[in-house]
Amino acid sequence: MEHILKKYFGYDTFRPLQKDIINHVNDNKDCLVLMPTGGGKSICYQVPALMREGTAIVVSPLISLMKDQVESLRANGIATAALNSNNDENENIEIRRACISGKLKLLYISPERLLLEIDYLLQDMQISLFAIDEAHCISQWGHDFRPEYTQMGVLHQRFPHIPIVALTATADKITRQDIIRQLHLKDPKLFISSFDRPNLNLTVKRGYQQREKHSELVRFIRNHADESGIIYCMSRSKTESVAKMLEKQGISTAVYHAGLPAQVRDQAQSDFINDRVQVVCATIAFGMGINKSNVRWVVHYNLPKSIESFYQEIGRAGRDGMSADTLLFYSLGDLILLTKFATDSNQQSVNLEKLQRIQQYAEADICRRRILLNYFGEQNEKDCGNCDVCRNPPERFDGTVIIQKALSAIIRTNQQIGSNMLIDILRGSFSADLVEKGYDKLKTFGAGRDIPGRDWQDYVLQMLQLGYIEIAYNENNHLKITESGTHILFGRKTAELVIIKRIEQPYDKKKKKAAPAKPLFVAEMPNEDGDLFEELKALRKQLASHEAIPPYIVFSDKVLHQLAAIQPVTIDQFGEISGVGEIKKNKYGKDFISLIKQFKTGR
Ligand code: ADP
Ligand code: ZN
Image 1 (cartoon, rainbow, N blue to C red):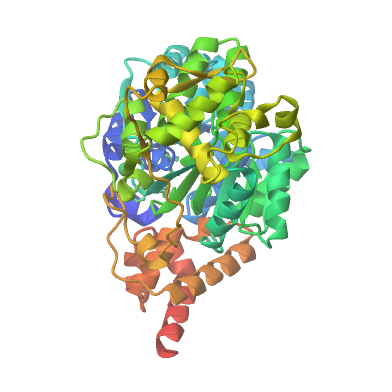
Image 2 (image 1 turned 45 degrees about the horizontal axis):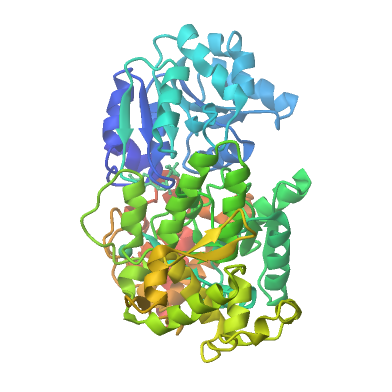
């Protein structure tokens, strides 16, 4: 088992659970594997596929996913093909022949195609195992429901003795039960790995107005020069306006949403995967097909609607286990809009509850990772050290007077205003609407002029979080004072607010690339040379475009970082690097070594 792992994938050790899962499959038993995105699910069926007689059938919902897997397996010298509607007839004939003669170790297939072939091709070949990738697609409760997946229950009827391994990153209980029930898994073992992704840095910025958001975004991306990233927006139009803004700043950006024609979307995806554009501005439609391992950051321009979707989306960063940054912008406007969507949906209470949980995450002043892991049912005793709260614990001051000013303005308008009007009154700005309603005559008009509007946004969010005000969603989102708010207003109690710190600490490149605080499987590495890394990256891109495959399939960022640190100069040393299998050692070793040698003598 270890020999195969090293020979084909270049890794020395299995991650937790991988070995148990492989043994389980090799005992011809069914199982359900739950691992976070980037957790290493593929190895769990690919290694048994290599160890067993015959061909493994892998069901996958998207052509792009199949393509990605086939390319990376082939790059490691493993005979693999994909059967889907993208192929032409000749290709299909050849694939069928290879299947029947037992030449393929893995065959990727779409669920529709699988159902068509179940009485034909599948009967004529020797099958080693079935792997159902993205198995949550079977569940109507999930977000990627695919009706064809529900018919896969026939697999076990037709092939009762061939083990099925179902894999997903969606953890909730309903989906799990659905998968087991619908696939008729026999006495299935559940393998659940930790959902912790310690290499993902977590940061939230709250109460930003659009202009500030944009300048923060540009600053963030400049700190990630040449590093791929995704920006998730709530609406299609937002993806386009944000992309336009970034393009103006000279940042190469593609747009991806379900309203675009298929070929525009495919182009965007392929440009991103092949490192031809740096950024994709996307709706949640972008994601499942993205196996790109060198996504170095993910930004949520708007608040997502649940922790599940948030976690899945940030999970697309740092699949290679190297450090990656995530940033979420949290604003009252988003909260109001999402509350409206949830209220209008047909699963109102579930959706409101989910929204509340992501809201708690965004507002947290305790370690954010603990909140996430807790949500997935993992208790964590220690703070992570890799989120903004851990790095910059909130400091408080006596905010009674500030809160009183706001509450007093609310009360003087008979609680008939939303947060923007409130801030206009406090700041003393003569907007037309405000003057028309006579709010410029209020005693509190201009009473908060000394505090910038953006800080008021933050304080209003804090007051909401502390329970001094609430939003009347059914009354034009007006702010209402709660009972505990009245205690502050009338001076019966005092209250603390969190100090707003906006001084941005510039990212320290060198420090950022070091292993995060508590690495699960991030190797400790000696200091590396950043210039060499950039040169290795350029070579990788050149080799990849020569073969028309994405750069990360040639080598992951992690491999390049190791090369930059260890600087091997012989083929054998090169082959020692984790992630360099036999085929890649022989294929790419020479080029990389000669670059490294040149680099060493040139200094
Ligand atoms: P998932 O399908 O769970 O999202 P992948 O199977 O794509 O994750 O694996 C994520 C990354 O981790 C890949 O780059 C993969 O090569 C790497 N990986 C998987 N198993 C190991 C291992 N045992 N040692 C080192 N890297 C691994
Ligand atoms: Zn933390």
